[in-house]
Length: 325
Image 1: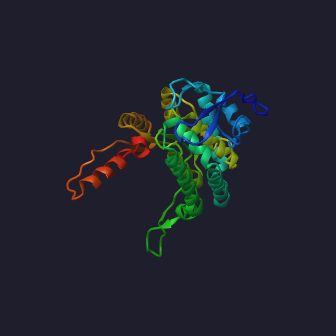
Image 2: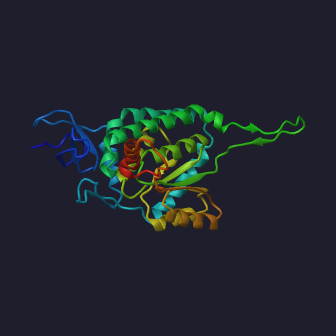
């Protein structure tokens, strides 16, 4: 019998074998996060590397059915935000922008670099969440986590250069510059195939440039979204600068049309992109759309058909087939 771990929060835990890794024994707790078993046989000790108290507290506010791809049962229910809470989040993003835009780029780089440390320190836990939520092979999940650390490090290191004014004329009498300035709160709508990578490449340059972020992740990966928010908070990103939102599709429209939102970025289907583009265009909002798909894999010629077939199989099954190749 597994004893309830000593914690300020009562966590009801059950032991299971990790279906996807096939090697680690994990403990699933009512917070919805995977805990690593540190001892074997029947003497279990549970260590939580992602601070279950904070994460469970955040998860308790939402309601949305969530199940993992390895089992058919609903594990948790998360509640979406009310319309009033959506408005409050937008106001917080606006208020945070007023302060965040006044920070030095060195200060922002230090906080983004702290995110690098958190990704590197929690590779196994973050990878396990991805594997649990969308079935990503554990090796690829670790690689994605490590890649995210590299992305944040890249922008922390080069952000000052990218944000610097660029002179574009050679006229001694006048000076023409390209200036890269923050615009304000942005909405990011993320897909479920690359759970941290998609956020990393959207959030890292915008944090360095002083924009604030409202993050709407895919409905099927709430725990990844909460883990990312935990790291933002732990890194010292001020309240309101990055906010995870469990919002409905109807509320997404409410956010886009809000005068406080300056732009929207979507990675998703062509159908979703068309809907976002229509709303953004109607209200003169900046929009960045990456519309995924899987193109036909055509081999025009190969003198090694066996190798070509093996390569095609590997490409098509990358990320369990959920990659825009």
